Amino acid sequence: MLSAQAIEKTAAGRVPRHIAIIMDGNGRWAAARRLPRAIGHRRGADAVRRAVEGCIAQGVSVLTLYAFSSENWKRPADEIEDLMALLRIYLEREIDELDRNQVRVRFIGDRGPFSEDLRALISEAESRTRGNGRLTLVIALNYGGRAEIVEACRRIARDVAEGRLDVEAIDEAALAARLHAPDLPDPDLVIRTSGEQRLSNFLLWQSAYAELLFLDLLWPDFDEATLAAAIAEYQSRERRFGGR
Ligand code: FPP
Image (cartoon, rainbow, N blue to C red):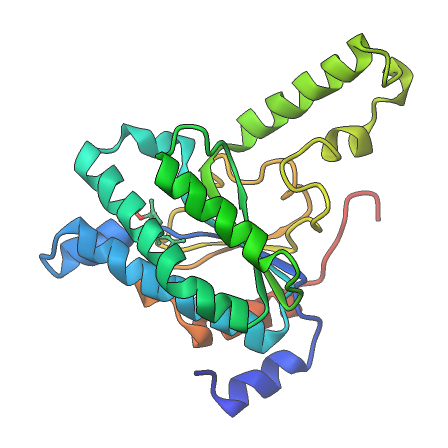
């Protein structure tokens, strides 16, 4: 849990409305302990719980987590199976607690390739928590930022071809309205763990003005204190949007 000190410190400034996290380093965490990668991912799922609890405690409105990128299909089949199993377990076991905590669960990305049972769990989690308003937890699954933008372009082209949209009316808002979760605010803070300093195709459109924070710790070590420190760092930066 958060120390009283950490809560006091972060309460002093503006809390980011939307935090997005590239959860990286599960494999390295496991390798450093000579454990199988699957254990690293399992500890990563524990860190997901802490991130969610931390966001609730801090008053963050939206938390987006990069759980499975469209690139992750290149991993060995058994690792993909481990990740799917973890996700299934997370959705089965945590949904009551998430619902009790007024967390709304949503998914972005192409869920088409996932198994029918996983897709059913995803839909159930979304419909069951639809009315919750304390925190929106967005899980990016089989997600890629470029693919999302391409899909939005296709929707625009279709709307133009079918007479619903004028070419002159195509602007940033028109594209943003055709992304996967157009009603959500853009991320204010994007965090990546494990020391890597890349966006890796995550929320490319939405992160245009986000503060980026690259942390050296590995994802399984992420906890409420890490989140509080990240928010404090965000508060210490002066946000300068282009043109101001
Ligand atoms: C990156 O570590 C992590 C992932 C590819 C998957 C993230 C998944 C989880 C944290 C668990 C399940 C998620 C939820 C939402 C319950 P890596 O394997 O790339 O680590 P490495 O770069 O050190 O090898």
